[in-house]
Length: 238
Image (tube, rainbow, N blue to C red; front, side, top):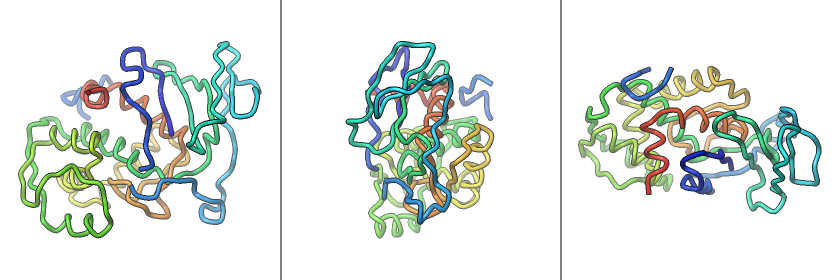
């Protein structure tokens, strides 16, 4: 759905599937798809234009660069390619169309965890109650067990690599007391980052009608997230 051009990581981030603390390192699955207009109301096909000129169908070129990228043949109906350092959009296809972000949601979950937990060796005990709902909804899990005690750093790996819903909820409840309160922190951060067409209802990405974003907004989030050394290490590990 979205990818940044990284000077060091490159392709290690891979393709997305259908699916404050200075101490934390900061320097300063269900139901993927487009939100149809009858569901989203005012979803539009507007294009974010930052020095772009028209190119053949499925392509966008920038005046500052001769880079030509054809996105027309991608399986994904929405895509954006942007430079990680500058944020400059090199190409996009339906970049402003609303989508259900599914497990891409967990990128924001990890950002909030890192901004609210100074000591990643802190531990959390995963409550038995959360697992029943996750099993019913066939959520992806990392493999931790009910009542298991796990450190926050291991939960972060579980959030971002196997897309563990139990890890997301455990962190959400630890930080905000409930997943709903945690989602408010996510939405506040989205507003701060200028993610203008994004709204989170949960920490896992499990489908809800009012849980949506765009690939351009997700690219903004990814660029911000990669400024954190811990998050960058996790995302680029093999």
